[in-house]
Amino acid sequence: MDLRGWARPMIFAVAWVIALFLLLPGLVTIPVAFNDSRFIALPQGAWSPRHFETLFTSAPWLSSIADSLGVALASTVLAVCLGTACAVGLWRVRPWLAGLVGAIMLAPMIFPPIVSALALYRAWVAIGLYDTWAGVVLAHTILAIPYVIIAVTTSLSMLDARLEQAARSLGATPLRTMIDVILPNIRTGVATAAVFAFIVSWDEIVVTMFVSSRAVYTLPRRMWDGIRESVDPTVAAVAVVLMALTALGVLAAIVVSLRRPARNP
Amino acid sequence: MAKRPLSGEPYVGFLLPAALLVCGLFLIPIGQLVALSFGGLDAPTLRWYEQVAATDSIHRILLTTFRIVGLTTVIAVVLGYAVAYAMAHMGERQRLALLLCVLVPFWLSVLVRALAWLILLRNNGIVNEALLGSGLIAAPLPLVRNELGVVIGMVHYLVPYAVFPIFATMRGLDGRLMMAARSVGASPFRTFIDIYLPLTLPALFGAGLLVFVFGLGFFVTPAILGGGRVVMLSEYVSISVLQTLRWGLAAALSVVLLVATLALIAIVSRVTGVRRMLGAS
Image 1: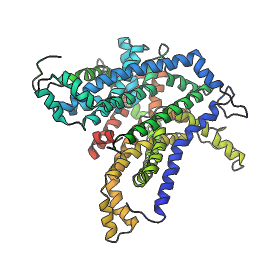
Image 2 (image 1 turned 135 degrees about the horizontal axis):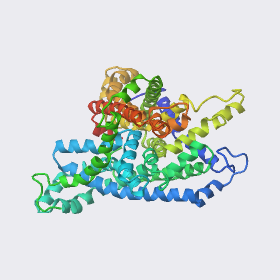
Image 3 (image 1 turned 60 degrees about the horizontal axis):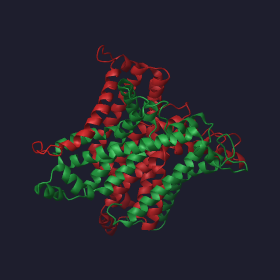
Image 4 (image 1 turned 30 degrees about the vertical axis):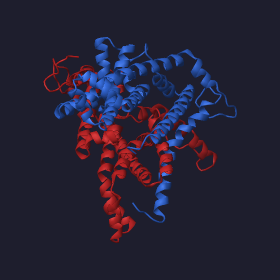
């Protein structure tokens, strides 16, 4: 729209103020992370990397990083395999069936986390998955599948359905068609899906708190403890590391999307 | 994989593994939770729902939750609309820079964001220290461990969720409609009110509903920034289970939360089509 005079720069200025309100607060964790104190506080002169040393040398923090990485990698592989197959299925089956199954598959994303947490806690205790590695991986897989399906479905919607028909009419089985024709064409969508799934698992806290207690202690769980007790400044060091990784990831994603021909904004 | 496809639906097999997992290990447990809220299948009872309906402290929790989420939604959607509008009308470079500022916090861990606001807003936090140091205030302002802190933290979390669907709609608008209005003499303000706003209102409403649904289930942000003094529904459910061991009550409250969520999602999907909203965000 065509706004002239004062209105246009003013709206842009307002937008920038809001954007800075979104971006800047995270940065306050930096001075706290480099503070030479046993408490969460701002540095009084002396800066020190000791909280980063704690993060990367203490056994509890290292084991939490390992737990989070392991769980996230395993649930990403599972969610991407199951979710991609499901998305391709949804793309090809009759509309009513796709609608029904699609709605069911989105449930873990839509349901409030605390509701999923209570339900899974009881079920995991009942079938012996509570506080096991497999239990946490399965819970995260279920929570990540909807994101995988959405990412792959988006990719499939840009694929010409006649490719699949051509392969099938030449005698390929659905599995062969999937491997040789469909997958190569949606690999960007599958890669996006894997990133989503990894982040869902890596960040998950509410369900994790309910389905695990000691055997699996993920990084968000340890951060939660550190923030709630408000005594462990190592969480600020974690925050700085996560922020740097997030910023790098977003920059990389923007660069990649600029290099590809623009399809969607 | 079977050589001979199921009659007309050769791809059904692709759905099965994921569908079985989600049905067996998610929907059935949810169903069991619902059954528990009715006292189990052996001795059905409505006593937990009666307790929800009759207990003042639960009413206060529900009221607090809806008040905070309502306020948060309105603020987040208004701010999101402004950012989306600017993004839709900027030059490419400036748009990318703004997008970066929205995307980084969007992807940032919820715990990191809550920690940052805690550091900023607590009594000996940066905001209060700065205000005290400048002599503007004599005693620290209560900015956190109250509803204000929760609202700030939740707005900060939810603004990006409002920006993306609204921006997608604004990009898809036909600019000639606004040019036509201007060419027949409408002022820019009038064009905005009569043409642009009505065209983007469904997206605004849809984004608002999504943000509201999302906020309703919030757990981490209110638990950290409310500091035990502002308890929203999700945290109360967790307390009912972990501290007071009232599973029936927790299950009934879960069902209330779930039904509210699903009802709102049903409205969203009628307004905009849920697939498009989810795909756009």
